[in-house]
Amino acid sequence: MFTSFGRYILLLRLSFRKPEKFTVYWAEVMREMVSVGIGSLGIISIISIFIGAATTIQIAFQLASPLIPRSIAGSIGRDTTILEFSPTISSLVLAGRVGSSIASQIGTMRVTEQIDALEIMGVNAPGYLIAPKIIAGVTMVPVLVIVSIFLGIGGGYLACFSSSDVSTSDYITGLRDGFDPLTIQVALVKSIVFGFIITSICAYQGFYTSGGALEVGQSATKGVVYSCVMILFADLVITRLML
Image (cartoon, rainbow, N blue to C red; front, side):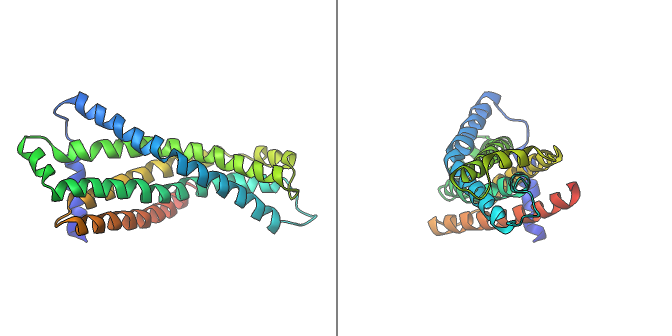
């Protein structure tokens, strides 16, 4: 474990060395941002809308009491979406989509000796392959989480509009009552940390792949599993420290 952690830290150190040619790295960062951000927008949108709608319906069902105002469904749905569902569920989905792609891409380059060719040409392979992915993850995952928050809340509104459990006016009233900006800060901190975890761990697994196609698949699987475990652990730590 300590050996793997040391190799991970050293790999990150090599990844953020001064680039040989800034324009080449910048183009790679832009390409990765499009892949991580635009490429994941569809699945994140679908998941956010349905989770927001289902959460609102379940809250309304569980709080069916004349002593509890119906607007509380909007408040609880808003806070759970901002604090937990959008950052954590979205990041777990991105670990499967983005993380497996990163690990398999870099792993394939390793087993086909493309990384060795880059190093022979004097290119900093970790900096060229890993740093743009980490920068894209840290930048685009918070953007996807913000989109997920709005779509999750919108999904709750659609659920209220299509059912009689909670009126849309009560739902909007609940959204406005007792809003704490700290929840947005917590969500953004979580998304930045999760983006770093996904990209760095999966890149590490791919970079140190050895063997053939079977090992590439195993590296992608390990990257996704380790990323999901570390996301849940970081979620607990950040929640405990900031709330």
